[in-house]
Image 1 (tube, one colour):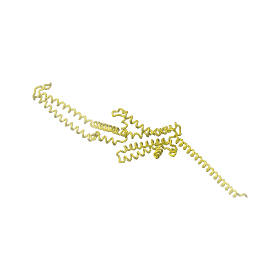
Image 2: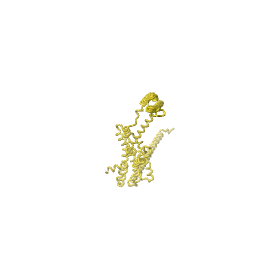
Image 3: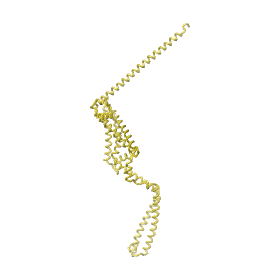
Amino acid sequence: MDKLNRFFWFCSGAHIPTLEKYPSEQNKYTGIGATIFFTGLFAALSGGYAMYFVFKGADLAVVFAIIFGFLWGAAIFNMDRYIVSSIDKSASTNKQLLQATPRILLAIMIGMVISRPIELKIFDKEIKERLKVSYLNGQRAKIDTLNKAFEKKYQVEFGRLNQQKATRDSLEKGIKADRQKLNFEIFGNKTTETSGIMGYGPYAKRKEAEIAQRTSELDSLKAAINKSESFVDKRKEFDGLFTEKLYTKKQLDSLSDIAGFADRNWALGQLKFNVDGSRDNNTAIAVMFIGLLFIFFECLPVFVKLMSARGPYDYAIADGDEVSIYHSKKDKDFHFEVADNIHETRVDSESSKKKEIIKGKAYRDLEKYDWDS
């Protein structure tokens, strides 16, 4: 237990030898250190999970996820440790708030980054279903776009084919009406166009000949339509329209399983809305509160450090800093005085040397002087 406490003290950024002297402060820094440690742990899991989806499908995806998760968690842990340990409890409340403000903003950003991949895992099933709908709609839109482009490209052929089909429908309708009139004539049903006399008379023969002629025209027209449709089908096959089909359930499952981080992140944002476009408040609130939970968890060490009263450990650290600063200033003064004395000694020595040189030169000049002249 003592080793675990010391580990959490290290995580909090506390000076362990000083903290050991004040048992009343140890629980506070154990809690702060544990929060920082678990924040780093969540960051490692979050980063590893995100990186796994970046390299999903690769042979070393798990290895990359583990390495990046460890590095990301270590970076967040180190940053949190610095943020908490850098708050000076000896300063005034306003100054502490001023010190903590940029750190809180940074903690909020870290919390948002950490929470997103974990949110993706929590709503994994819902994200997959939303991705399936998106992929299916996208494929349907793609097919519709290809068909419209194809119809525009072969507008003349489609116009001729539609005209032939309209003529075919008109002929079939007319032949059906003529057959009914022929039957009325044969069986003696009286209408405005039939005689009402039962039997196969001249009118029936004439009507039958007309039907035969129109049937022949219809057969020729159907052959032409089949030829036009065959041409259109060949062009569709050439342009690749037959290869574009709606995804099956198995294909949609596979696509949603290998979806990348960007697609899943987009789908998570879309969970706030229903398929019909209306807002899904329940899911939106759930996503928001999960994000806020991690943001609060990330800011918690800073808040604990700010809210906690200044204890004996803080006084000891502040006093130690003042003593260190005082020693540093005295060392600076010492080095200044030594440098000044050395400089004075060098000046005195150099001055004495120069004086002796000048005296010696003067003596030599006197010896060489011609006094007789």
